[in-house]
Amino acid sequence: MKEVVLTKNLGYLQLNTAGLTAAIGPTTYGMGTWETFPGTSNVFVMKEEIDVAGLTAMELTFFPMAGDTQRGPVAMGLGFVPGGVINEWIYVCAAPMDAAVGPNFMTFNLVGQGTNDTQFQNVLWGQSWTWVVNSSIPGHFGIPVNTSLMGSGEPTNGDRLYVYRIVSVLGYTPTPGSFAELPSARLLISGQLKEEKEFQQLMRMRRTYELQQTYDED
Image (cartoon, rainbow, N blue to C red; front, side, top):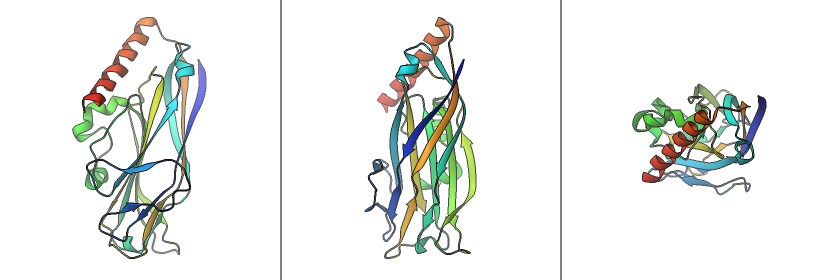
């Protein structure tokens, strides 16, 4: 048994909220690629991967134990006072996943629920935040009014972990010159590497393969 900590940097996001539909940028700091979530408006996603092939090549299974994110403050422009909300998810999967999301869905649900409830085991670890403006201090910084952990904590022996950061904005008033800013973050996933019996390894590989096929069909 060996303990490891896996890391992944997730980039900064600036959203122009001058119009009814928020737009990415223009500032990016060259820290990863954000895109509008397909089929939605005001929902944005960054997709990254953690390569663990070197570990699984040794026929070791990764058992996630805990996770965390190191990050700076969220800033929310004048258009978010009052009533504006930012929902944010960061989560890690054993196989690729396209979650069916929208601003309202993200307010009242977690990834792996609703139309994606069969994907719960695929989500190894995640965390959600709901941000609103702290109007009592200068700078229009966001404060979390709700946070929650997500995921099944299922072990995996796949050669990659798939990381998603999804952000939605809801209820803001379009205001010229208004922006929302989500800081860069460092994802930390700690766990243990263990050697399993051959049958157990094969069953985990099969499960990862099945999840991959579900993703391809969608």
